[in-house]
Length: 193
Image 1: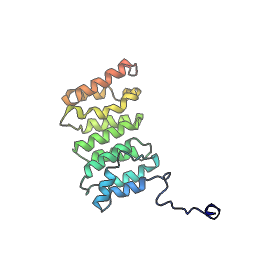
Image 2: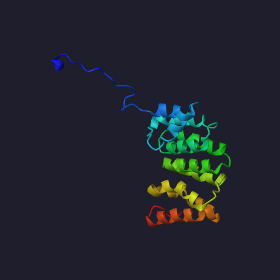
Image 3: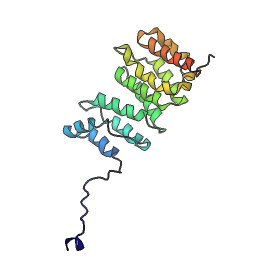
Image 4: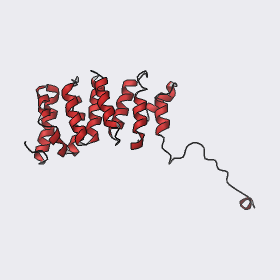
């Protein structure tokens, strides 16, 4: 008799699992509540952004300057932004590179994000920015991540070299620039001009 008149009550509480949580995440990152901020910072490795989130990420980056871990948060957001496709991303990254001045960690994060765009236009921008204001990291190994995105798009090295060889005079860049060039030559993706 219980099952004849039993009707389940809709007890779904909270957001749908199918709904994007990017707004919630980005708002939590810049929350006035430090516990909420801390929780959001720990969630970077599980959040997945969509291309349409790019304008929101750009807006959030501008709000992180006064945060306790603002530099780290900006690096993470810039990294996430670089993996998305949106026409606003490259202009934002270019202007940000100039604005950060000599903050090496942010310069490297921006260069990697530009490289992750994996387009001819972004590659040319990468070259011009790094030539105009070359970040000098504390350790040689800190440079490799900015070149890593080019390894799966070796055809773009046509737009990097020979200009990038100018950086090989710097010990921090020598190994990374030659390694990428040799990989491109070995795979017949780079042709001498």
